[in-house]
Length: 386
Image (cartoon, rainbow, N blue to C red; front, side):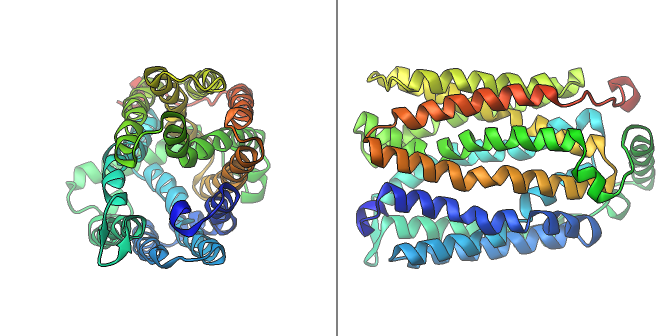
């Protein structure tokens, strides 16, 4: 798109970031609708609409059109992630919640493992006089539309509605979840929950971590291409490797966190590890093997995500947890605008990625340290849950 339409790094960064204006604004309403209306309805509607808008992004020709397309896409997608986190809390006990979340979120790196090489191939094609990047938007929107339709008929809002469970299984799961909420979560008004120390500290950690996450997410292919000079296809293939590491690390971190029933260090350690990866990238080594290793270390830091998202639903009762998840994702998504834009701005001004990577090193260190100030959550033991 940049080459074809002549967009600068600043225009691209702003286009990537403007998505988060509408995305942030609708986080809490979206999460509350999942809790009070229907997870199935919100998740399926969100996917169908965002898939359609993604495909329509292929029509972009100007910076203003790019900004508008990203803005409406952010509004469409806003309720999906917090909605799924709330939805999982309706089905999984604390001792299984990080694993369940990591299974869900492992789809993110897995999509890069599959999608990155495919994207590289599609970018090199031109069908029916449409450039490859336009086809990429069209084709990547289709699975969301299809799966959103399937989700409406497949998902069940609550265990008591699940016809694929026996009556005994439904009763056991409902009673176990209800008992756990009474003993381990705090019932409090939504506004008080949003101002609690735990939620504010988790939100602060998420702000720092998302600054690094989204900057890396959007700029890794460009950095790899500029630092190696490889073709789009080769960059797509190599760009998938760090996400193989993230996929495995995310599953392992969620499993180990549930096994130990520990959340803070399982969040902090991966983030601090990513800071070491960014620090190594500051010198921009010319060895492709070293670059891949450092990109992988930096990317693996995002394996903290499932563990962090297990915290709010373990700490708060249902409605308060839904609002807290929405607020944390809303506040934490603000750097999704600032990070890619600032990284692109610094790259344009300095002609190098070095300054931007230094900023990412500092924010990763801050995010890893801040999360250690989250109070310990007194939950149930593994033995109680099994």
